Image (cartoon, rainbow, N blue to C red; front, top):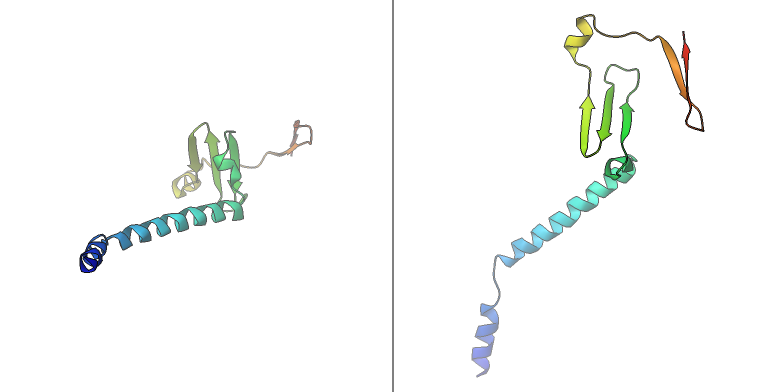
Amino acid sequence: MKKRRLLQANDDQDPLSVLTNLFDVAMVFAVALMVALVTRYQMNEVFSKEDFTMVKNPGKENMEIITKKGETIEKYKPSEDTQNSGTRGKRVGVAYQLENGEIIYIPE
């Protein structure tokens, strides 16, 4: 009787069950990594319901403008063609946003 119980207990172990456990660990690690990156780069706005616009590297050649409207996120990066074609703009003034939300434009 005891020998049969030992054989039945070994039959329940599946050698592929280790792979499912590794997959679970990998998924937990991936989610933790994503949360860490979002908090590190302070990009909490991406997951909020509010619309936003973010400028990366302002005033430099590798500047990018990221906008979120509803569920869509758009990324604009000036290409080499627009810089050489003469359609690139020039600075005409400065805009400041006050604490109460009012925006003041000062032409140069």
